Length: 434
Image 1 (cartoon, rainbow, N blue to C red):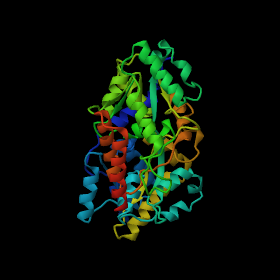
Image 2 (image 1 turned 45 degrees about the horizontal axis):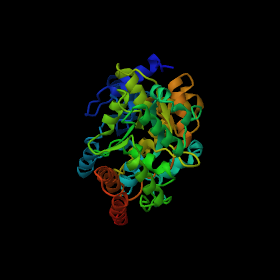
Image 3 (image 1 turned 45 degrees about the vertical axis):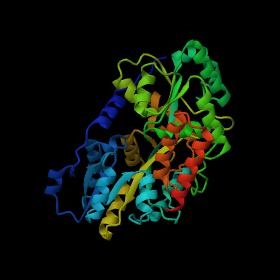
Image 4 (image 1 turned 90 degrees about the vertical axis):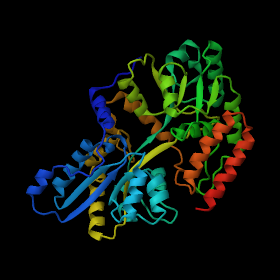
């Protein structure tokens, strides 16, 4: 069965891929100039979360807001992940930081919120709408001091994928649960062995040149034998566990799975889509849409899968994105920013547009959002497996860097236990100091 993407999705991805100007703009400027003088002017800076990084798409959302709230003028600036953090640091240092930022808890909660730069949004969380937000999302948006520094809009769960045609030819489809897109660790091992015996030398690659796509390698290791990356309270990194060491040793010794210290996640995806790898550990719905639209050489069926588990349900790494408000000392601007968040999240029609602009999924039950989209409906099943959002643990930046460097050491032949213990000592010392 070959996948097809409707024109609407193709158009949406084209919008996501459109370059975004880095200078502030004001949508519908001519209309606004004709109206009476605005009472409050605020700035919204967005990271490239789907089409929230696209100027045209965001301007359309803002135009709808300003038709209902002509007293609030919203200027928008699109950031990228290469220099976005630096842009915000410079703006704060110069006393002209943005009012609103659209990003995830690792920045809004664990970084800027932790520094005391953001407004507590607990009043927004007291609304009836907020009561329907999933509990794991709520936990990720709340700082350990009790303040909510993010109000979420959308989420996704990352997964892995297999070359369905290759699995069928190698007789490995018997090792997966096609209906639920799940498999056990034992069946994962059997599938890799079957593919390797079939002649597929490179079954899967543990890419680790840098941190890009590291959510995939972390989820793979944690799921194989039930390990975790941090404790439940997000105070300590727990990689130095027997479960995680067992998983890393398995991957190091399993024929067909290779550690690749010089491979990026993008290169892993490219090799998978060329048929050079039988599986990808760095996958999600956006990756499949991108490949179907932009890769004319793709000639096999992609079948998304959860990561293999020894028992119980898989726990996928996810992404959460929403709004935070910087404390710029102006109550009018703060209230205007909250009005903007309410507009985008409390009315179902407005909220649906905000989520669709992200190309991800809602953080509360909105079942019909992708009802006419076969591919997105299929990927929606992975949302139920979203695990703990531990990226708000102190010392996260150091832990993230230490992770791929640890994988490099293992890939270069270092003993797993030695590499893991060194990693644990480094990141937990860093975490205690934050």
